[in-house]
Image 1 (tube, rainbow, N blue to C red):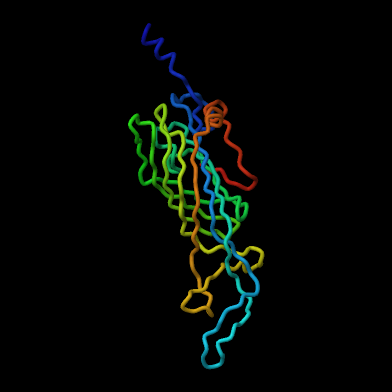
Image 2 (cartoon, rainbow, N blue to C red; image 1 turned 90 degrees about the horizontal axis):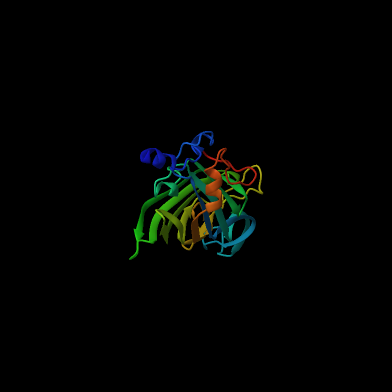
Length: 243
């Protein structure tokens, strides 16, 4: 009788990996919201002025040409991941997630294909084991930038409570593919840069990004994802939910 009562008291949550059809899970789903906000560069096409090296055929004067160059700009990546039956650390990666979605809002609004959020390590720290640290990477390709690749490395600290991580915040740096000027069709040229050793020749090069990031447990969305039928968080139009 006691054993039967104990079994009956175990909560049953939606099997959200199968669309929430059957309430069989004993662990509620966990939803995390992720956001990277920072600075990077954007592509511009127009007249640029470079100084040619003096030599045969030129006198070292400045020359104006049409070129796709880059200027400082902003980058914002947002998304969420859902683990339907998570262990304490599985809900922090796309590999462990049942559903995920990522997109950019700056410099352009676009779906991110093949998003991969991963950590190299995540640890519980602090005298009372209520704090955390994490180090990892995020990669993906921006659909509306001709599949331009993003590659962030992030690190931060956060909180640990009730057996799972509740939040993180920190900084990131990125080594991303060159931004594309999608206003110049059909070519959509990639931006180029100058090196100080040769201010007359534009060359191909990656671009740097940097800023802050956050990952937060979403209690309301987690409750909805644990019900039958499952209710997934919303995404902007054109954004793919990966499963």
